Each structure stands twice: as C-alpha cells, then as structure tokens.
Length: 160
Image: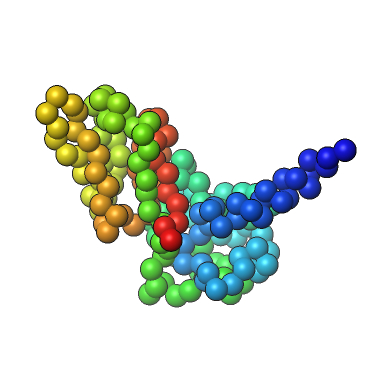
C-alpha cells in the first residue's frame, strides 16, 4: 500500500527549487533547513502576499497582490536567511503564457496597466489586437501583473 503522505513529501522536495520563496533570500543556504516557520514574515508583509506553502514554509502568492520590496519580511526574520537590501531582491521574471487574451486576439491590457516599471508594452499589429511584449531587463518580478490578469496567463518564477 502506498503512503500518500510520504509521496507528497518527496514531491515537495522535488519542486522546492521552482517555488518562489521570498526576496533577498541567501541562496547559499538551505532555506528549509534554517527557516523555523515562525510566521513573522507572513504577519509583517505589507501587501499580505506571503502565505504558508508546502510544509508550512513561507512563499509568495502573487494572486493576492504584488511585492513592493519593502524588506519588512527580512527585517523581522529572527534567522540569518536574508542578504542585505543593497543586493538584488531575486532573479524572478514574469512570463506571459499562450492563454493570454491578447494572444487570442481579444483586447486586454490589464497587465500593462499594472506594470509600474513598464516592462510590459503592447506592440500594435495589423489585423490583430496589440500583442504584449515583456522586456526582461525592465521586469522586477514584483508580480503586479499576475493578479491583474483575468485569465491567469502570467506567472513569475526564478530565471536561471
């Protein structure tokens, strides 16, 4: 008989590197070995996008809002998990998937309206609606575009 709880444990470890944790994490350390799951970062997050993920470890949920890079999660953490604020917060970038309304020729610019650094621009096309263009160099990985998308066609993940 297969123990379902053990199967989930192994899949959690396997997907660990793909989950978007918190900005300014010291990647030289093992997050799950040092984080005590105290919940202080979750409570302190000004936009309330830090939630308890697999195993109770904090992770970012951009469907709830965007990261303002306030550094409060790092300031309140009692563990040495974070690098200083002078470093780049993370290597996360947005990705626009094929389920995007504009890519299906339906007018929508919700993501571009929410993108403060203007990393999402729209290219006019003959016979089609304007198509989204994501400028990776301008994208901060803040996630503001994710919650704004009516079709959940945008995700933010680490770029390696």
